[in-house]
Image (spheres, rainbow, N blue to C red):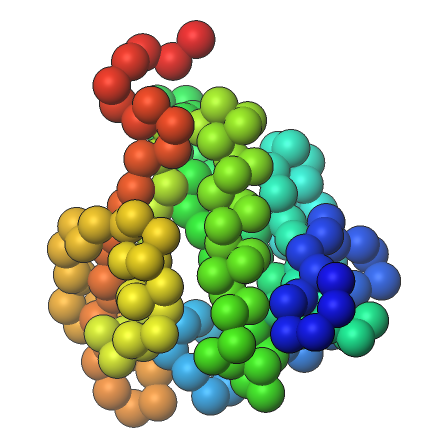
Length: 177
């Protein structure tokens, strides 16, 4: 794609160093992740492989042949009763925030997960102050489900998580096939 629109594509193994760098920034400077030490490039590759092993999308946004963000859907919980519910994760290069990259990525992940037959997407957003992420999820049809107060501790303070959810496809209106 040209101009300001990022190209969205499936991630590749050679994207992992950039994905790891983007995530490291958010680990070190934000509350979107409750990790306190950035994982290694190898660990980030292992995590990506785990997502892909379930046939789930792990996408990147590219602008000018440079990865500027990534988004994936992972299993919400491991037990079989949760098999139709996923959780999304989105991280954008800090220099590219506010340019529609998160929205472009999440829209594609939602579409792909719906096509795969999943029925619910959950967002677990670190920090009530993570307003951009909350607003993005609201704009894409997620409803507020609640807040877990003071469940994380990072940067010397307690941090809440905001829980949001949206149906995929028919959601709970019909039984899965």
